[in-house]
View 1 (cartoon, rainbow, N blue to C red):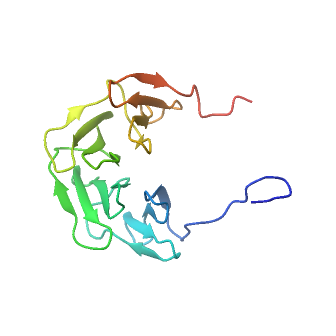
View 2 (cartoon, helix red, strand yellow):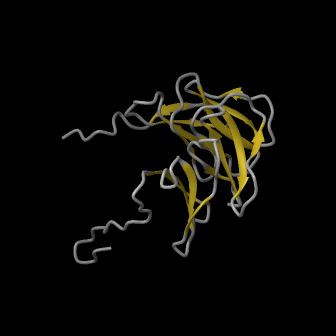
Length: 186
């Protein structure tokens, strides 16, 4: 931080000659999962707390935006090529499918690890992380998608190009708009 003016100083955390996008911090904030095409095709990479970066996914799945499980040892992500949901241990192994049917491009795992949320045809769906029949959570939209740290709220935009942020309370479905616009009103 710039103590003289109280202003923050930007620090580059991830950088390559490719496109690095959609960073998501691990629950302990020590690692970052992100998408990068630096290996020739978009894959999930992990930036470790010591600064090392490593490619997590390989092959033809074409992963979408990842999310961490609460203990930070597993990543859940959609395959944009197969339109399916996968889980993968962060310390290696092969991606394992989660049987929930067709999915879109975003995921979020509940803090208790019991549920996975994902986007299907621009609606947020919920299913057990072990797989099973999903239920529809939102009646309009759901992209992108994130859960509050305590898991009580789902934050989302109602459609892909929306400039409004909405939230939905998981316990009773109460929904409210939080912002009118992400654009400056100047």
